[in-house]
Amino acid sequence: MLKGLKWLVLLLLLVVVSAYGIARSGSKPLDQAAREELGGDYLQTDRGVLSYSRQGPADAPVVIMVHGFSTPKFVWEQVTPTLLAAGYQVITYDHLGRGFSERPAGPYDAALYRSELTGLITGLELATPLTLVGYSMGGANVVDFAAANPTQIKQLLLIAPAGYMRNVDSLSPLNTPLLGEWLITVFGKQFARGAIKKDMEAGLAPPDMLDKFEQQAAYTGYTDALLSTLRHFPMADLADRYRIVGETNIPVTAIWGTADEIVPYEGAALMAEDVSQLKLITLPDGAHNITYARAKEVAAALVSSLHP
Image (cartoon, rainbow, N blue to C red; front, side, top):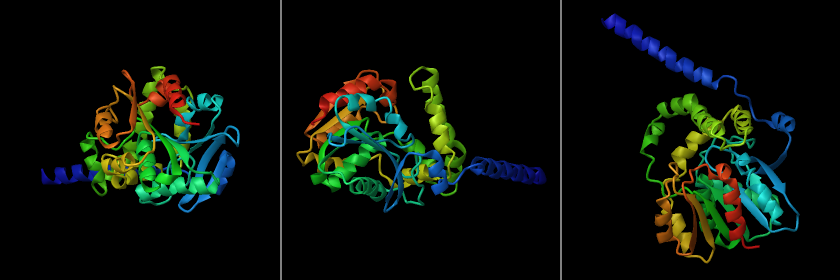
């Protein structure tokens, strides 16, 4: 009996180690050679190389768009054309650890995400104050940046922004050393991939979205960046940063779907208590995927809210 149990434990350990090794195998380094092969625009910052895009007239009002936790800058592709047609210059970039930006060791904390924006603004020699658009975790990122740099901000436009989440208890296993590394490595990509595939099958996502996700997720460091962010960036509770913004005269607009299960719509009421200047635009039955599933409505709401 005891001998059988011993062999069972060894077998389970072998399966666990093998699953981790298989998930790690095949990842490619995102180095200079890879970037040259991929093409695109890149910017060296203090924390690493950022992959970015810049579209529109050079003398047009600038809008910087900041994506969320797991899906890189291509999440904006259905929204950007409307902003360009309205006469804006649109800048998007991949967070460090995502897309084709560098994958530094971290920690992926608030200081790192503020540094990204600082590096982008200074590196591209952008005149401030600027308009920032943030989606999901990106909404929390731009609020945190604005709280630290209020004079650099003209306006904040938030789409289903993190910062008032009360549904993160299920993430607690990821905070456990070793277990968290195993879970995010083995299941992290599958979770994000599954959500995109489901949206594509329902006709809610562009047909090439999964291919674009797979391409960037193939590079080493993607899931490590996700885990470090979950452990070090306080996206569940940033009420203190929202309150600081609420004490400024920065215009703030939030676009939010009532059926959002990732960043629940109830956060809008909490935000309104801390940000008195908040203008809320509600999308009935909108889920968390509204930047592409309901791109026309989101783009129209952005354009109607932008101050040239």
